Image 1: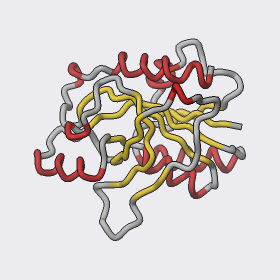
Image 2: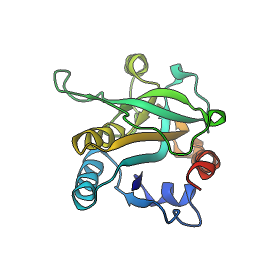
Image 3: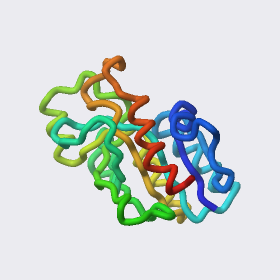
Image 4: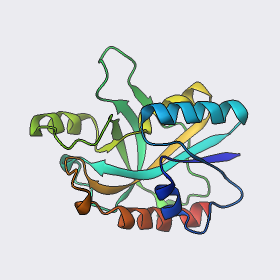
Amino acid sequence: MILLVFATEMERDGVFPHGVPREFDCLVTGVGILATAFSLSRAFQKQEYKSAIQIGIAGAYTSSELQLGEVVEVKSDCLVEFLPWEPNTFFASGTLPNQNNSQTLKTVKGATVLGCSSSITKEIEAARGDVAQIETMEGAAFFAACKEYKVEGVQIRAISNFATKYEKTEWKTEEALAKLREFLLPILG
C-alpha cells in the first residue's frame, strides 16, 4: 500500500480536485515539522506501508535557478535551523511508481525550515543556497519518519515562490499545483 502525504488540504485538493485515487491512502499532516512527524508516526503505527510520497509546494532559493511552477524530486532534506551536531540530513529511499523515462525530474536538496524566510539576509540565503535548492517546512520530518518506520519515501514538490519572498500575492500556488497535477496524474492516475 502507498500513502500519499500532503501538508494541507489545499495542496491535496489542488493536485486531486476530483479526489485521491482509490488505490492510495491519503494523509493531510498539517504544516511543519512537528505536525508531520506526529501524523506520520500515528499513520505508520496503524497501517503498514511499503512506500509514502510527500507532495506539495516549495520555495526555491534564487541561487538554484529553478523556475516558478517547476516540479522537482527532493533527494535529501536537512534541518538548517537546528544545532549542527544533531543528525539533521535525511534522504529519499524510494521511487515513484509507474514512472517512465520521459517523466524524469530534476533532483534537488531541500532545507526544512520553521517558517517562511521572509526576513533572512542575503548572507543567510546564500549559506542555505549552498546546501539546498529549495525550502520546505516538512521534508526532513517526512524522510526521518519514513526511515524510522522503514517505509520507502519519495518527495515531489512544485516551486510556488522564491524563498525570500513572503508576499503571498507574488506566489504562484495555483500554477504550481497545476504542474504537480499534470506530472502526477499519469503516474498515480
